[in-house]
Image (cartoon, rainbow, N blue to C red; front, side, top):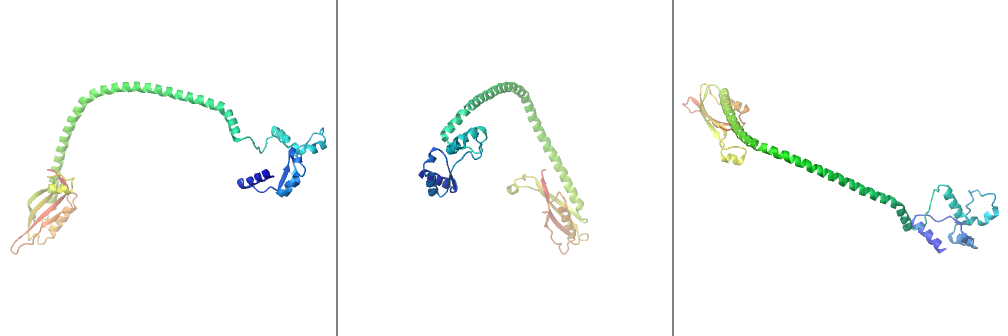
Length: 292
């Protein structure tokens, strides 16, 4: 009873099972007198003897009384017969796990040996492939090295010619830039003259160049490049009675793509009492400095 009770407790606590409601006795020890009564009182459940022939037909050559006396002893034999004949929905293996593992391992040994041989063969094939690939690569490398050496002999004089060509091209670029800047200079002077109001003329025009102080704030500038034009001029008061034409002159220069919005008068004094001239000094700032 103690072993049965321990098994029931283990089933209920570890396997989340429920209490037994029916007990079936089988085996030779089940015929011990009062076994069914004892278990019924202890376990509080219905106790019966297992009859494996409820759904199993019995040959007519066997007496029914003989079967009835030994039915509780035949459960194992009936189960083995059914297992041999039919597919069992549930099988319980009572072998120890270690014995089962050893048995499975012995069954897998041929497969493992075959897999090992296959692995060795695969490694050998890949080793042969890489050896062949290395040999071909070395042969190709040697051929390419010979080709490279031949090309290097041709490259040396070509590099010298390319160096000379680069120097000549640099000189040509510098000359072309100088010509372009001269054209820009002429176009700027022409544009200034074109928008100069009637009655005004220019007395002097001075180029303002980039200094080292300018490059400290803007490293992209080059020292000596022309960044602005300082224009001084005059006009008759009878043709320029007020400074409006001068402001129009400045604004038109600001609208040009060559001159900056920073273009401004540095001097625009009012005419003296007995003077017939209006004087001005205008700083025309270039949008992009030019080198002349």
